[in-house]
Length: 120
Image (tube, rainbow, N blue to C red; front, side, top):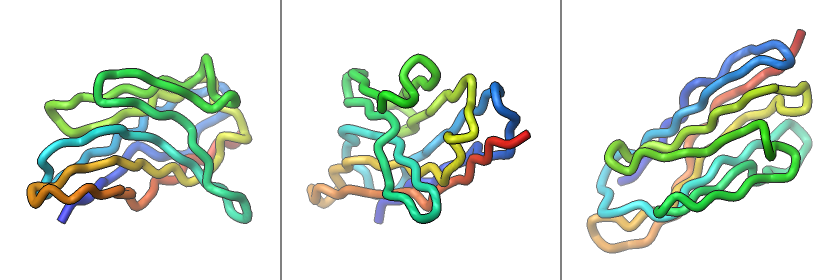
């Protein structure tokens, strides 16, 4: 069993900052790519940021220059630093990881989501 738990979602004013964390635990042999996605009601889930095991990153155009994804491999944790938040950033944010389990099964694992609300 492998699980991801997100934390850090909150209510924040436009222009504010927030840092999300996602910690993986369970029967993990290794973790490959990790990413952050978001979804608002009635809209499709979209990729926000992605990071490889070696630290390579890519971002959605809408968040480039404002968000930074990082990871701590020793802690099996991925972070999303969000600055200059806008109203349209409001969504439930989910983390995802490609995990090789201790049984050598490759799993795509999702967290439960954490709500970010940007409002004045």
